Length: 401
Image (cartoon, rainbow, N blue to C red; front, side):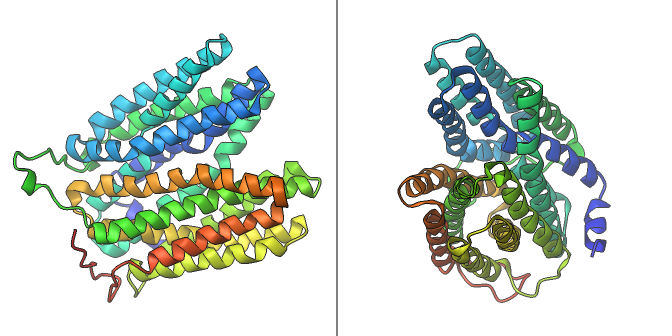
């Protein structure tokens, strides 16, 4: 099974840029929770803490596409180095604003600026893989590897930031996130030999590669719906563990969910698929919806842990197929932008999913709130049906803009 992974990592520079990108991505799963722990510890108000974290996430979602476009036009080294330094500076000022008791408005503004500057390393590293690899099967394996690393980030990041904030200092978790982001991103940028070429804006507007919206638009809806599913399921799982009298186990339940996804991602990268990613997105989105269906009927922590672990098997294959489809149909000059659109959809869906499930928890309990994730999975499945069909794994999708 590991032969496929060894083959792609054997490319010159591949292991280095993948590992540095892993370090640079740690803030994805650390900063939001770190802000909540920091602000709630300083103010005693979880509502304010959640709102500040939401400012960070919404700004990140809103500016991800813009950053992706700049990455394609100006090159990864120039853009990522600049935004990583800006991210470090603004997040440091956010910590100062909380610790020094500055007006809360300044904290909101700094959180939004930090979110806008968070480097889009996940999109950049996938674009880099697409540049250095020639065989579609190898690109599929590389995307599976990055999906596995994403899951590792979301397993380790929350644990790391929580331990640091609660046992060392409330600032420690965010400090580590800043160092990881800046150091990891600058190390990633320093590897110029594997960097994709920039595609500057051409003088004639008509010469710009067209975005294949017939494929990209349904995929963006799929990602947004899955973002709602993820955000709702996370909040609902915490509430479920609390109702069972073991709130501390909520992190373990979510870790099992991520572990199932990680396991499926490893297997997905080792399989040589005969069907194209368009079909796999359809089946994956349907599997995500089906995986949410039994959660409302589970009444014990052990059974919920097992059910979430199995449900996680649908996550990574769906996301790998999504990014593989983007890589196939989006012109190279707009590839990072296309991937950033998917990331924006995911991030944008998390906040409303979490809010809606929270309302259902308050009025009807955690079991009923899992229906929010089920509904989001159904929306994703229907959106996936609008994707153009492929005949084989290597055949591109014919997608007019």
